[in-house]
Length: 133
Image (cartoon, rainbow, N blue to C red):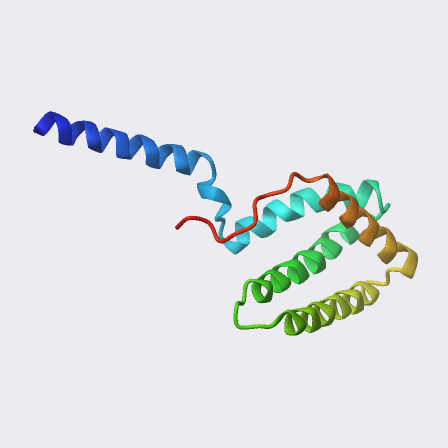
C-alpha cells in the first residue's frame, strides 16, 4: 500500500512539474504578461514602423494597456455583443488619442495598426474556449 501511495505521489509531482514547465497554460500575472508582450512588440515597432527605441517603449505601453483592457470586457459574459463592440470602440479611440499624444503622425499610427494586424495574422491560432479548470 505504501508503494502505491509513493508511486501516486511521484506521478502527481511529475505532472505538476510538467504543467509548470509548460508555462501553466499561459496563466501569467499581469506584470509578466506585459513584459512578454513588450518584448514582442518593441522589435516590431522599431523595425517595421521605424520608431526610436524610446518611442517603441511608450507605444508598447499604450498598445498593451489597450489590449489588456479589451481582454477584460471581452471575457465578461454579462455584456452583450453590442456592449462589447461599444467598449472596444471606446478603447480604440482612447488608444489612438494616447498615440497622438506621443506626437505620432496618422501614417505612423496606420503603420502600427498594420504591423499589429500582420503579427496577429502570423501567430498560431489558439483554441477558443474557457479551458478545462
